[in-house]
Amino acid sequence: MQTLSGEFSERSIVIIGVGLIGGSIAAAVRKRFPECKITGIGRNPERLQRASQRGLLTHHSDQISSASIPAGSLGIVCLPVDQIAEAVRRLLAADCELVTDAGSVKASIYAALESVSHERFVGSHPIAGSEHTGFENSDADLFVDRLCVVTPMQSPVSKTERVAAFWKSIGMTVQQMSADEHDRVLALTSHLPHITAAVTSGCVSEELLPFTGTGFRDTTRIAAGSASLWTSILLGNSVHCIESIDAARQLLQRFREAIAAGDATTLQSMLETSAQRRRQLNHE
Image (cartoon, one colour):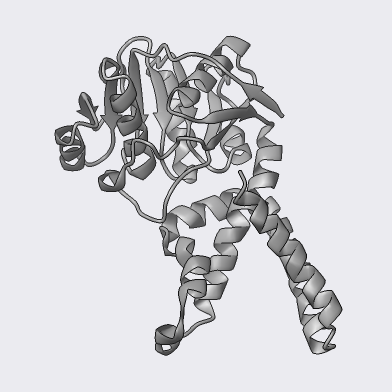
């Protein structure tokens, strides 16, 4: 794991997929570097027009082509993970100078790009987001003081540093990891929490919702996220997600055994260990 640094030098950015993340990237750049041109590319011209009217984009197009990509651009793909590889392939074919992405799964994207040179593609994962969707919920400070992981495969150091510099310029700390290590870690820190939030929410029937309090709401907040988006994430990282579910099942079984045995000492110890770990976040 390596911390990366750099300085912003982009004159043109192309964002594929102007939703919450793509829109927030555009908002962050417009706020900090208003001279940088931002081209948004997507399937819905009307929504792209509205994003432009909100001041997020300087140009927009519904086509990935050399005509829609200014020379020297940094392309950022902000699509569901099962659509990223194809968009990267099309950007590279259109001579986009350098391409990165914002997907929370990395190894499956590289696998899908096996026949493509990775010299101009540096995978990224800005660890920031919300259960909300759409550029209407974009936040220019969404990435401030958050971590971005970059996972270069065959890219020259200069291109990796360029991608790192971009994420740092909008407020992020950047670290380098392998694609597989990223996926293993995120299965525990991001994908498992979504699974457990969904399980907790799914265990409570509709007629019991009036009896829920802040604990249920805090625990299940992320379960309100896009089902289609999270389906692609969990299937795209299936091996490590299954490993994380198995780890959670083992710990859940220990809780069950302690409760069934009336073992207050073990139960309190496990609860305190988890509480101490959670409290550490409050000091970061």
